[in-house]
Length: 116
Image 1 (cartoon, rainbow, N blue to C red):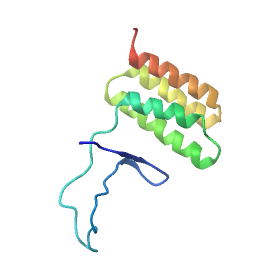
Image 2 (cartoon, one colour):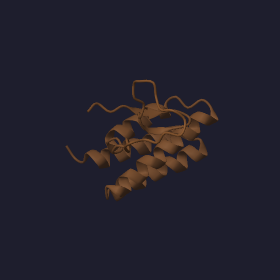
Image 3 (spheres, rainbow, N blue to C red):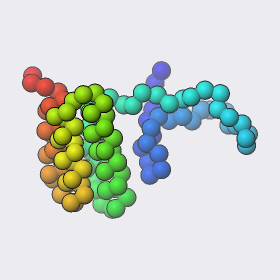
Image 4 (cartoon, rainbow, N blue to C red):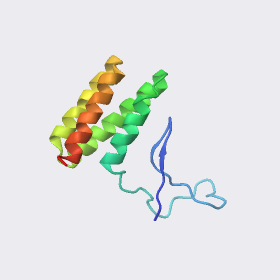
């Protein structure tokens, strides 16, 4: 199944929209459409792209939330060194140092990908 992910100012997660007329007021969902989170490598690539376009406080919040998600996902996968680098991204974004944040994401990607 081709699953799309939504990343906007109010929601980050799988696209749960379906075609059709929708549900009437008061109807409940018949099944849980939540899916597994995206792969950690894809999240880190997305984080690097978003770090290059931080212009407003909303952009900064979005990047911070994505970095926090990446760090928690790395911890969930028992990748402690990768999670440590991603926590450095959180500190750098708080400080407004996006160059250091990008460098920390690069280090996290190197740890995640391992030696080649």
